[in-house]
Amino acid sequence: MTARPLGTEVSCDGPDEDTDCPDSAAVRAAFTSMTAPQVRADGRRDGWVVRRRDGHIRDLCLACRLAS
Ligand SMILES: [Zn+2]
Image (cartoon, rainbow, N blue to C red; front, side):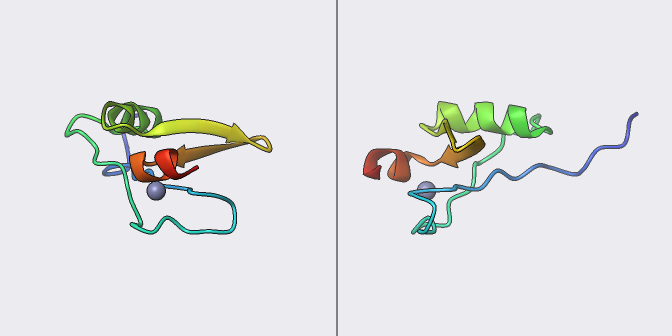
């Protein structure tokens, strides 16, 4: 399996279920990051966090992490 999508975008799910991220933030992926876990790892370097809420993984950008 060599075919891969050209880039993976991880968008902010914050600050909560009913509110969209005010900045519509998305992780800035490193050039070598192709998979969602890799992109999330890039995000964590920028202050993103991953939380589990009701069985779902929620990606929160730095602004939403501080707001919630
Ligand atoms: Zn956000």
